[in-house]
Length: 197
Image (cartoon, rainbow, N blue to C red; front, side, top):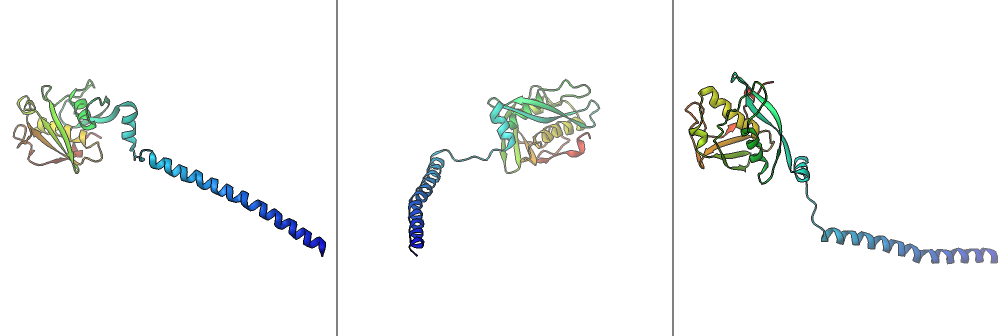
């Protein structure tokens, strides 16, 4: 009986010795987690970064398809371009890449070289693209050329998933058309029927 009593007392003593150590470990773990929480609070809030934005942030470049008409004026052909953003937003950079022309054989540049972009603003799913008056004044072409020019602009900008249509403006105002053939009084949606497959 005495042996049993000693054994029980010894086990009890061991248990009592372990308890404070375990408490310390738990407290330390609590300290670590609370420190992490404080650090997280002090640090900047996490941002959700899309792959495209992440790419832009790392190297300041954007790769996009821009659309040029074939020489017959029948279809629009996608040309992949990588552009430096610089001070431009991605929409303006994409349009400037389109307007800079192409050296691809069998394709033509349709936007007048003298035309300049004044601004690109996106509201909801529509891009409002404001050009100077040279877009109209220097445009030479008939109904086909007009359709190809509008299609080039619309299909290039709707490569961005957030843009579904564009409204073309000249000197900040809506226009009826470029040369009397294509209605530009309202936003134009992506013209997939013109894209060469």
